[in-house]
Image (cartoon, rainbow, N blue to C red; front, top):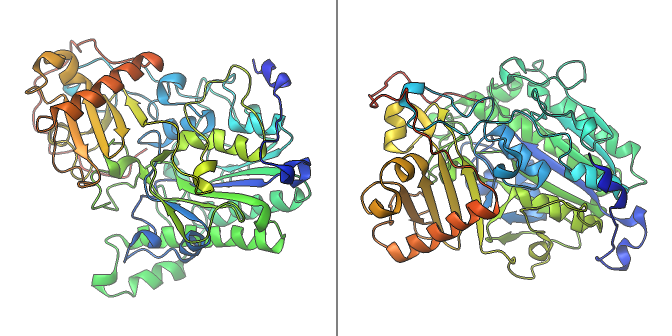
Length: 489
C-alpha cells in the first residue's frame, strides 16, 4: 500500500521562486514510441524532417548520450514511472522473457512481470502528494494481468485516443487513427492541451505518451505525398516512416504553441524523449542495433529539455543520462522529497540543466535476463543466426566505456576462468567507437575487469536475478533464415 505517501514531506530547495505552490513549475513529458536517436532532424537526419523538435532543441538543452533503461516498451516505461532499474520491478519484456524458439535458448529465462505493481509509487503518485494535478494521455502498457491503470498509480485523469478515451491495453497492431489523425497524435495532444488549460492556475504534471511512431505506421495523405515527392536520394527508405514522424512532430508543435498561448512556457519544464530505439525500418547508423537489443541503437534516445531560466538555449550536454533520472529530477524541480522508503536508481539532472557539472554516480546499468526474437541490424552474430534481437545480457556504461555480459556464455562456458575465449564479455570504447564495432575485451583486460567487477557488484545491490539454469529443451543452434527484422512489440 502507498500509505507512506501521507507522510511525504514537501521541501522547497529551489529558492524563493518556489515559495508558493502556484509558482512551482509545470512539468510536461512528451514520450515518443519507437523513435530512434537518429530519427530527428537536429541529430543530422537528412531524410526525416522534425522542424518543431529542431526548434525546441535550439530553445533548450540537447542531451547527446541519453538512454532508455530498457530496450523495449513496457520495461522502459516501468523504469521511467518507478525510477528504478528492471531488477526492482521485474518487468523485463513485453509479454514473455522467453520469446523466440525454445530450442535455441540455452538458459531458462527469469520470469517476467506483466504490469507495474499497484504499490510501486510512481512519480505521478509523488507529484500528486506534493500538490500537483496529474494527467496521463496515451499509451500506458503497464497494466497487464498484475498491474494497475494510470488512475490507480497517481494520475488524476487518464485518456487514450483508442477505446473511446478509455485506456485499453494490448497489441499496438490495431491502434491506428483516421487519415487526419495518424496514430491519434492530434487527439492526444488536444486532450493534453485541454488539461493544461483547465489547470493553468495550479502546478500540473502532464505525461503525453504517444503511440507514434510504433507500427502500423500512419501519415496524413498530404504528408505521405510530401515525402513521396522527394528525389530518391533525399527519400527515406520507408516513406510512411518519415511521414509518421513528421506528423508526430507536428503534434509536438501544437503542444508548444498551446503553452505559449496560455503564457505557461516560461514556467514549464518540458522534456521530450523516446521509450527505446527504432525498429529495423529505420537504421540508426552509426549506432549498432535497433529496438530490443542493448547495443546503442536499441537504447540511445533523442532527449531535449527546455526550462526557461534554468536551461540555456542551444546548449548540449554530453553526460550520460537515463530515463530513471526523470523521477528524482521531477521531484527536485517541484521541490518535493522522495516518498519514504522509496528506492530510486536515478539521480536528479538539475545540476546538468543549470550547467553546474557532472553527476555523483560513475555508472549506469541495464539488465535483461531473457530472450527477444527477431534480429536487428548488426546484431550479435549468434543472435542473428538463431533469430534473436538479444539473449540474456547485462550492461554497464562507465565513462567512455561500455561492457556487455552475456549470461549464456558466462554461466555455461566457464565464466571468468575462461573469459579470454568464451565470448561472454564485449567491451567498447564509445568515445572512439560509438558504433560498437571493435570488441576490446581481450585487448584491454584491465578496463574489462574493472567494469565487470562493478557490474557483478551491482547485481547484489540491485537484487538482480540472473538466468543460470540450463534449458533441457535446448538444441544445438542451427541457422534460421526465416527470422527477419520486422516491427515488433
